[in-house]
Image (cartoon, rainbow, N blue to C red):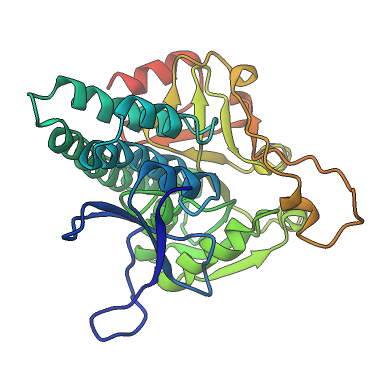
Length: 357
């Protein structure tokens, strides 16, 4: 097991911090570390994990202490920088990190970028160059968040004339998953700042409740008007005409536009289509994997059944089916918002076009 220490988060006055980065690099005298906000402890505790080696970071990724496709890309890149700075085998570190979770394509992308930078570096400068690459990716992701929010605001104005949006979201897609203000929740935040958000409907997102714990946490901090609902209550909202658009993130987008996202997203897409409500995916182009031809080729992570059986105590020996993600086909997706623009209609041709802009 890696070296992973926990510490409470405080501001300079010793109270709870009001703006906590999900991930950051520090260089204390004893050596560089990667500091993560432990998302398994939110919203009731704001605790940071201090990772001094790759094994600790892999443990944090697998436990979902750090999560969300763009942020996993950053974690992968910084993990390579950490291995290089600490004198560990970079190739071994890359293998451990890239396979920590199989569905999110950004994790492997971040690892590959930092490894390539390390290998191309001048002698004895590999660690510094890998860290610079991780920081560059971090800045790019923050810029992508800003651009997606801008494109999202324009698209919402077209899809929901008159403003006053009632938006439904699933899982967590804000600053906790990004180097910036997020993907889908970044668009919601832009609508809120513009005075156009009437209501954010927050799916609780079972079994690990990322919506109830994390999206509600971020929405409350931002002062958004939000309401939490059980996942299986979404249908009644659609029936009542209370949803203007659905906004979700993505962990991998295949070349044909099929999108893997937190399990429960596909049923929302079906409901949205039946009720003629736009279903919109928000993700940077780094989440698009042109090497994966379609949804059938996306490897869906299967997580421990105990996450389901422990949600409410089940009889001893109960088996559970617990996929972390499901896949929404492109014909159910109204649009995909990227930093390079909006993909609509969602086709293989439009996916390639947005990647090449």
